[in-house]
Length: 424
Ligand code: S3P
Image (cartoon, rainbow, N blue to C red; front, side, top):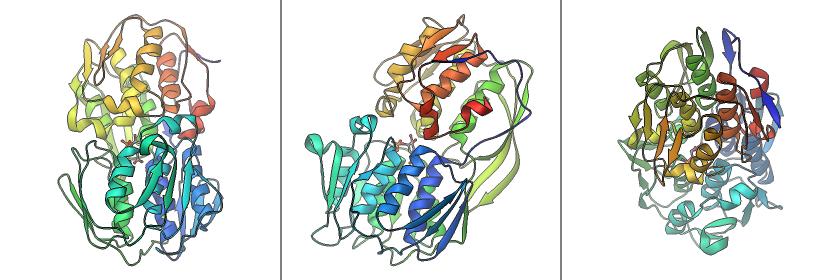
């Protein structure tokens, strides 16, 4: 158990690590160019290291030096058959995107992962890839890891695919496979999810058109990598400090260099609707991705209601937002959050079980909705993280803003934020 004490003081400036989603994509796409790429501000978290491990297994030369990574691309058709089983660890992004990337390759690849990833649903990627002609087979009737991808009989076909859930991982898997298909592929999402794959692929010269919820991907002959990719800070990691600085009294904190891609800024919109004061300063652009410094001043919050297309824009920030809602006046109702049940753990069940230990009778959930009754009394509690990095960090800021908390696992934060506790 690690004990976190109530916070008395916040730094004026906070630095956050590089974006996890963009770090994964930077490694994968740089591997497919045919030049050397330097990746700056790379997130050296366990998930992104799983991606590096898998790409190395497929013959790509990758060197890491702190938050710098050097990738020597082997070309779009230069991956080689891995000798070993590809281990995605805890990382849904590694697994789902690489299923899409290996589906068209002329070799066999078998994937595994940790006990959490083995429980997560994979039919959502296997189904569209099989429709494109991929020979892809998973345990439990094609639903779970381990998964094997065989050399396809012939070139994959371009398809038109209507996604049942808004998922950037599924969308990106189809996009990567579509680069190798015999004709263009159209993907229709229920709501737009994060678009880092599309943006980065365009920066690599691929032709991808987006109109509303529809993405059209054209087959590619080669990808041309930039010399350098600068990864912006991760807004999902900034979320903990955005919430903490807002709910504590009399603070003003600037979080430096936060990625503010519009498909990721739902947390800013919702916190502002709740009454938070967040200023966006020093806006910059690199490789099609925007970043800025966020200046947050403590504010009194009130409950809000949201769902629908807002959810993919803040899916990973809901545990942190639930903490903000516990300090707000009135109820917060978050609809359409069923996807949280299939994250690293069932996050709806985890929030209800563990957050209620800190503010009894404050959190309720059904299959698809989370309700938070704000403003209740907070007490010290011993809580479980279920080895989920975002649960560990959300519980930590919850306790830090209240009467303290003890959590059973701190190691899991290395997935997305290795120095979270130093900063806390
Ligand atoms: C991610 C997409 C989201 C998100 C995950 C990272 C990505 O997952 O929750 O942390 O990098 O594409 P889904 O695609 O399952 O929504």
